[in-house]
Amino acid sequence: MAAEIPAAPAALIAQPFPRLMGVEIVEAGKDRVRGRLTVRPDVCTAGHILHGGAIMAFADTLGATGAFLNLPEGAGGTTTIESKTNFIGAAREGTTVEAEALPIHIGRRSSVWQTRITRADGKLVAIVTQTQMVL
Image 1: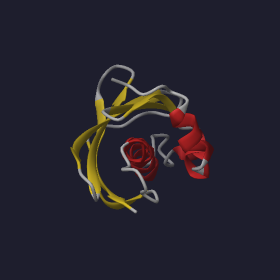
Image 2: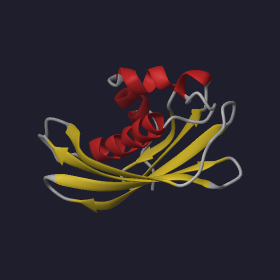
Image 3: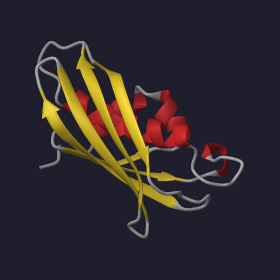
Image 4: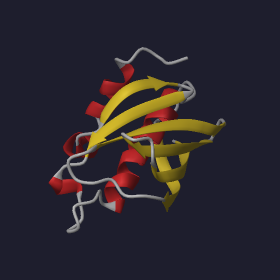
């Protein structure tokens, strides 16, 4: 069940880089975060496909948002301590990619999130697994 969406934009406001990239969070809850990103020229490679770093940053934003929503009372925040990306396919400039981050583990000191990034046709672009530490 998703939390009310106003929590996500507030978390995003504190993150200037995802705003700069154009990350849009469309659903945010303790058990799932969904987002979208338009593949603009400034987040592409010279070959006009979404840059791997942009893919990783997009996934990191969603996983961190989910971790933030699961922070225990009194926690000072969250930070990424590990991230692994499998690049599967390409997303061309001018298209939109969507992503869904799901928790694999939520504990008192860390959480692990897996994010699947797909194209509009449903083809997989990447799978990112990240560990978030509770501060």
